[in-house]
Image (cartoon, rainbow, N blue to C red):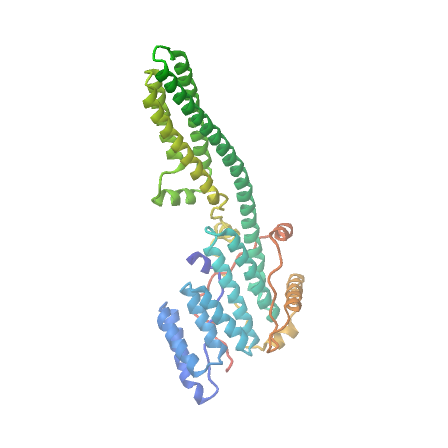
Length: 417
């Protein structure tokens, strides 16, 4: 998951107290910032926690705690801290930064689930765009948010394409599996019929030992061989089907100790059928029946295993995202400087000349807010991101934009609490 953090933009607030009562909190945050820069995140968190005790309504401290949790990959806690920062702060610049890092958190969670649960990863990507939109609505000068929206959309397009292909492949594999199960049922019926025929020949021989049943026994051996060949064909088709599964899923199945697989049961069924044919050729009906019954048992086990494995179909492999492709093409591109935070959010909103892209994003965020209503304190809450993968596929732009890497150090603000 370290790759997911390379393009994320962070703002870690350095506090400047306006009164003596804030002196202790300032020192604690300064100490926490030093630990954070040194990568000693547990110590940084301890300092921020103490600062939060001194100044519980300081959004800056909650924000810094969110940064620590993010670096520790404790994303649920990071989300809570950023949400608290956005809720309690009166600084629009900090509120925008909190929403921005909420977007980063959702994006990182999506990256973490990219291989194990692609649809869930897609949902996290959608959520990250919603947070970037809110950050852009709060601070129209936060161009990193606008760029991240575009790149995450490209990532979503790539992932949606792969999910769609995986689903189509899963449907085709399901058809093949159903055909294999159909042929397995046919082989089971044939094997049962051959066991009954063997029992009938044994009964006839017991009733009249003088009557020869060589011709019928020879025919039974021929039928049994045909059933063995069908079993082998089924085993070959099942092997081909398993080879179509993602490599990660194959290795996981191989690593987990379990009962014999459907493939192994089919192999054992073939061995028993071959032995039954050999016994029939020797006119040893009793031993042949024992082998036939073993074969029947393994065929039924193979069918059961094949039905159980349906749930393993359709998993999407770990895709290479658009951002990874961009890094390979463009190399180590450095981010633009973060917008200045020494100017009030309202002034920057009045002076801003939003682009057509930004205006569209704000309209979407406002529409979502109207849908969801407001919290008790009057702060608007954005609705769930409504863009579907299909819309993203239609709206893909030709120019792919590079996501931002994390700059070193902390971004100070020349503002008192």
